[in-house]
Length: 112
Image 1 (cartoon, rainbow, N blue to C red):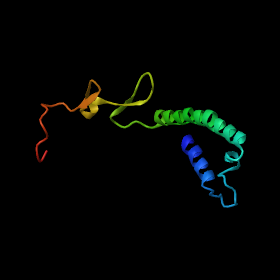
Image 2: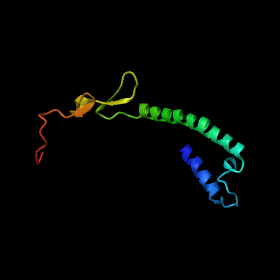
Image 3: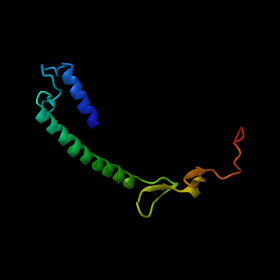
Image 4: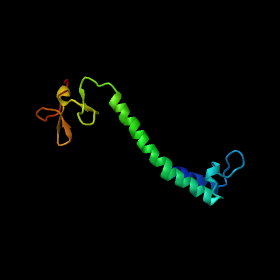
């Protein structure tokens, strides 16, 4: 996302598009006529804001998964506390990372 934002602000500037107020830049921090301020903003965004956003979002997602109620065929993993599918309750078994349904391997018959 950050690289797209930088690329688009540069294209916006070089195509002489304006922001509705007659400015050739998207925002004052991305004024490509002032290289020092622009590169400072890029540095803050790419090496400050973006890297801080990822762990915050991961924490939110992890917390959400730990707090949600379990369905009847799930249990909490003893180490992570995250929901796991209970293979015995669903009739699914996991073999080498691939879920398979127990049976003779033949395709399902019509009407079943």
